[in-house]
Length: 435
Image (cartoon, rainbow, N blue to C red):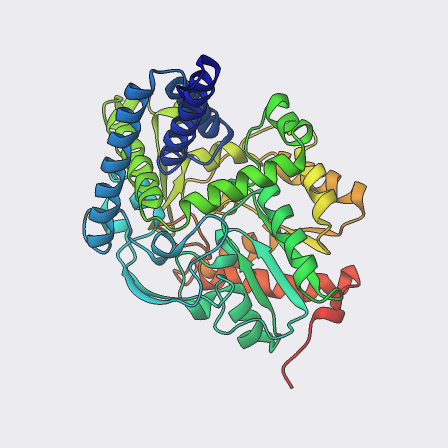
């Protein structure tokens, strides 16, 4: 019996929807993980869904074949020049944590600033060998979680990017103070931190203390009222489902990380080439947008800064329309530590120092939110300035000269502050020493 016209129509609609969804799913491997990126994927999937089924099938099949070929190529050349990996973080990073139960020993030829701005002199590079070990949960720890009361949450400053295994905050807490702690560091932001802390509250002992480190450079991104509202107005369940689906699609593949690395590297190269074309007399403080990095010297030693982070330091005001407050209210860490950008620390210590004092827009914004929620918050700026000034006389730094991240000296400042300030905050019961 021939199918009715209604049946044919329904079949066509279902086929178009299936092809659109499949096309969008494949496209997720290429798209940036942002609201804009996901919106573009949704629009492209919708456009494919309204094509004639034969055209949509051809387009989807072509994208699938190309994607599988690229995935195979990148897997085959995983440690070759095709991939943009120069440090363990890129090799092991997934979407919310690292590949679990991995040990990677890797020669790191330079810090992230030379990767971001290829026009920087290679003389700035500080080559090092980085040992990077992850536990079964995918966080950077030597051993699986074993009941530590002190849980450290943050981004790459906590994970210890640019530093070897023994130079993470958790390692310094153990070696310098004999205190056990657990490292939950991975790149995120206020929303990612709130997700991670909510998760660990469910899976770790209830009497554990959560210490959150927030970095000035990228944890206080510019956000519009519309962007902040998107997190409030879109039902949390829908957001969680969408994130889990994206994670499910992307995590098994090498391609998304390679595409991300290549695109960001290409952006840096283009920007640096544009910067080289700007006449020297035009490269002044009002022309920061033409530069990727800033250069200076400390006691004659060259040091570089990320220009975008320096712009954050210079902000006179900051407003995220309640975004930080909302996520801190959901997360409820026991204490918060503000990690200043490298430029805020070393601007006053340069041989040609920055004139005047920097504004405190980010710290003021964080402190207001924390005070309103009754969460103790501490600023590491003065401690880092003091230690950096002392070390400068001997030629040492608290940050890598070729990187946006701190080194073991900066880690030690943070570890000392955690020990001292947790006592002041009245939550030092989680500071459990080795017996």
